[in-house]
Length: 371
Image (spheres, rainbow, N blue to C red):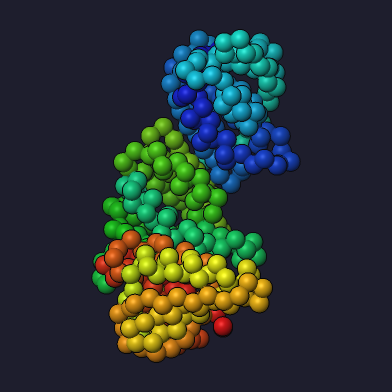
């Protein structure tokens, strides 16, 4: 195998594929990137056995072939080469050494057999639909912060995606929760998605997909089976195993009888939370909210740091006290993109609904703290 490729194009693709590779693993082949060069195309593949990515890029292929080399090492080499240069890669006849050459720089990388490289993407995908890249970015951004990181409740370590009904209209719904907060986002149901199974997309897959979507074209093709999902766009294919578990009945968590409604400017609210929580205890991040007619008082106390209060104006006419984790509350209020933030409350011990007054596509539920 022998080919030459533009350094910028190679680096851009390596940036994508090498991030899937775990820095620490006990299987040597999983540290490598699979390189296949033929017909003017270089295809690079990496996997961690749960997630797999393929990306193709144009190259000047002199001799077709395939091999695997250490992914992070190759990425570091290419990253440190001068801009606007060409990189030549040449596989020795023995198949054990890959030479990387650019200008006066010359590197020799050890190779492992292509036959040892695993594939997870050989599967049938009976459900296929397309989704605008902007909608997929919004779906991820509006829910990912609520994903759990507790390995014991592995079924919460991702985003639950399914076809749902919203007031008689079919929607594609994403839900994430860690038990303390819940994020829900609806978008129009794409053609072909009505028969999709309810799936849980793993946290790592969500992170890798979101990075790739920064540079994605207009449309993403989503392919689904009972156990895998594939995202295809531009010259990239990202295939992932799904979490094998049952997502809890999230609708039971969404309160139906909250009767106290207040409205507040989300930016004023977020900034006040951020300022007052500077004082709050580092573990619980407890923030007390006191409603007094048209005024909301935010307060925090810490035995070590002192105390802080701030008053902001609201639209409402209720009186109550309730506590929240300031970090969780700030995560939610930062998602409100409109001019108004609505809080629907019941009492100091019940979950609160938070949403954008001008946008019904997203809804957030936050459990209170005792303060």
